[in-house]
Length: 295
Ligand code: 3HC
Image (tube, rainbow, N blue to C red; front, side):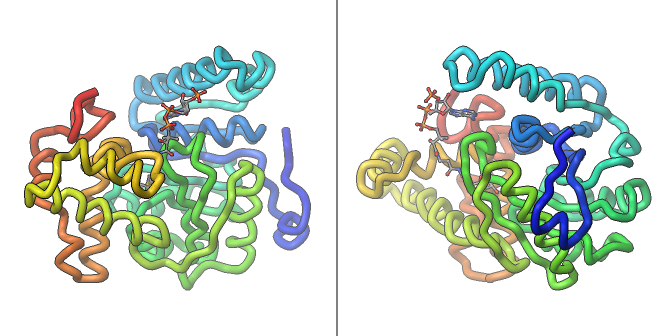
C-alpha cells in the first residue's frame, strides 16, 4: 500500500493509506476514480448498497473507456480497481486517513455527516469537503476537531480537470493544509490555496458569467446555441456557458448561485428564472438527460 512520504509526512507524521469518499454522484465517483489511479485505497460510501455498487460499476466503465483508447493498460486498470471498495455504512470509514465529503450541497446534511464522522473516524483523520460554495467553517464547527477540517474542491469532470482548490477555514491548522496539499499532489493535480469565502476562486468568477449568459438568452439577445458558439470561438473556452451549466448540473448551479448571492448580495447573482424553472421541472442537465440541451 502506498504511503505518502516527504515534507508533509515529516511535518505531520500523517500517512495517507486510505481515503473515504462520501457521495456517489458525478463528483464522488470521479474523485474516487482519481484516488484509485494514484494507488491510494478508496472507500466510497453511498446511501444505499445499490448506488454503492453502481458507483463501482461506473468507475469500472470509465476505466474501461480509457483502456479501449489505450490511455491506460490492463494492469493499470486492474490496479486502480483493486483500490476501490464501496459501502453504505459510515462506520466502514473508521480507518480512513482522510475523508472527502461530496454529498448534496445542503449545509444541514453536511453538518450532520461531519458530526457523525467525527465520532467514527480515528483522531488523526482529516475531514474535508468538496463543497462548491458552502462555508467550510460551519462543517468544522460541527466537529470536535475543527483544526483538522478543510475544503478539497475538485472540478467536473474530476478525472480530466487538473485543478483542485485547497480551502482554508480560519480554524484549520498548517498541518491540515499541508496534508491536503500533499494529497492533491499524490493525485497528480495542481493545488491552489484559497480562504473560506463563497465560491472560492473558480466558482466566484465562473458563476456570474454563467448566470449572465442565461440573462442574455432570456433577453432575446442571441440563441443558446449562438451564445455557446460565440464563447467557444471568441474566447477559446472548451465549452459554451449552456453546455457547461448542463455539465455541472442545473440544481448544483442554483445552489452555487444562491450561496454566492447570500454572501455577496449582488442582484446579478440571483439564479435566473429560467434556470430555476428547469430545475423545478426535473431538468438537471446531462445527468437527467435534459437541461438547456437534450442528451
Ligand atoms: N470523464 C472522463 N473522460 C471524459 C469526460 C468525462 N466526464 N468527458 C469527456 N471525456 C474525455 C473524452 O472521452 C475524450 O477522450 P479522447 O480525447 O480520448 O477521445 C476527451 O475527454 C475529450 O472529450 P470530448 O472530445 O468529448 O470533449 P472536449 O474536448 O470538449 O473535452 C471537457 C471535454 C474536458 C469536459 C472539456 O469540454 C472541458 O474542459 N470543458 C470545461 C469543463 C469545466 O469548465 N469544468 C469546470 C466546471 S465548474 C466545476 O466543476 C465546479 C463545481 O464546483 C461545480
